[in-house]
Length: 328
Image 1 (tube, rainbow, N blue to C red):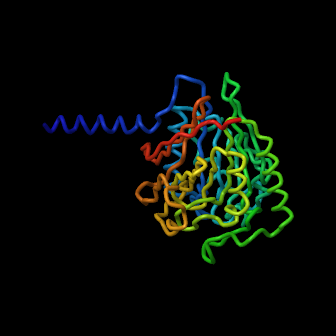
Image 2: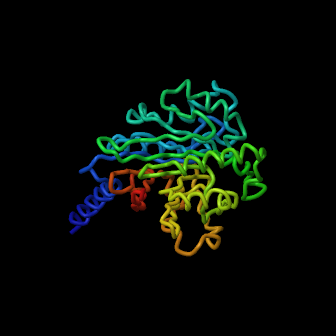
Image 3: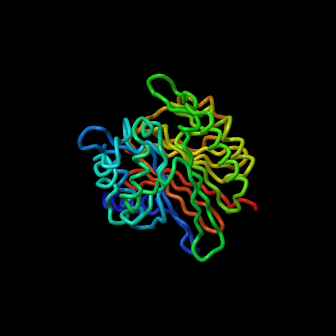
């Protein structure tokens, strides 16, 4: 009997690992990860144990299933960004942590978080000329991808929500303090509107650091609710990717837009402070337990569907859902 119990435990463990990556391998796909708030600490060794564990699991996931790129949704360097392009944090917090062989040739698409904006964001952009995998061409930009051997494509619009809504100070308040340059904020909104209006891709993703919807410490971002959410609805965006709150959430609105919050790359905070500020039925998944020790999201776009899997350090799959291509 004891041997049977041990055997069952082993089988369940193996199944747990397998279910971690329930991917579709019978048709071509585009595969990528979304990770946020992974930026270590400003003291030696310049990374946290959680960041290290998440990086290890990301490397193992990509080794097994592949990745065409990785999206970083901000707060790349805690607590005050970097000083210049030679800052040791690039090596100590990024290069030497996300150093698995499977990650060395995978492109990262970067945006800044509120902590990055406390330092030199221009230096983060300039690091694109130093590292072959670090891509940060501008404060906001877009990239497009074709699913191999198909005519199905995906567009990713990456925003600077700090320029749009202002910086935030966790000790002073939950909401951003308002754009410091109104004209630049308006220019970014004009750019976003034009890009969404002209997008013909089957999958259209928007990424920003601040969440549109969140039940946790910072809650929904009122600025994004006012200026960005109506555009997401109007132009039929597939999903909005973000971080900022240090946990994992998946929300989906009445329009079918998925809100993917992946903010557990470095810290884990178990907060449901703003649960009543999110419409009933929107929240589909939440993970903030400290013992989870970090997580990221793995996504696979096929011609038929966009599979979204939440994976915590150690390889456990905690949630999976599916979105579908837009109607042209």
